[in-house]
Length: 290
Image 1 (cartoon, rainbow, N blue to C red):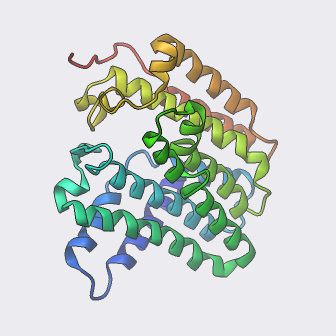
Image 2 (cartoon, rainbow, N blue to C red):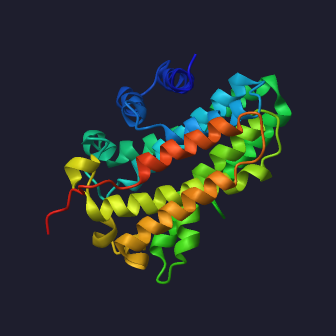
């Protein structure tokens, strides 16, 4: 089974479990709506790539770690899109959850997906409780405070923002979780994998800032120009377009250099190179209307 199939199968099973029994039909439907069809599934793919590179001797645990990261990511998108934050009406080319189902159901959907993520890992942990407990703690750290995506969102309410800390928490957290949790699931120490995840996360955020500034909503599949509209700190504002592109390339080069020596080192290098091609803006850029 390929990595994509492993991710999708585990996610489908988690959603099906959340929809089973005597449950509120609308909320059950919203769970599936928020997760499928998904985006590129880049975070769980990174997680599984690292696990495979480290031996992947507990594939069920690796699958659970990857799916949990994606569930947290999907939950964060549901919450980010709500009127109290970005007030976005489109995500992945379709109406956002609060538009399609209502604000109360969007809030409950995000909350339910977060709880589901931990449940997925806890169930898989029966095969290796020690690794499972480590995965739960990693997921908690990179989801909440002080260094997780909740902290990243919190920076947007501050008058003075540390751009590096903001990017590291809001976007980088789940990428760092992906590399560290992939290593843990395969029985390796995670610290050597922190830099790779952090660099990929930072690169993804810089690329996202560039796309938000340069592309239109049709190209993105979600509202464009949100950084400017919400006065959010961003790489284009800090470095300019060309400076941000240079920063992106420098970060990705550092990501490749940071990959620890392991049996799957060559395949990981190739994965990062493919992500670099995907993230780097290409000409002609679709300019947004003024």
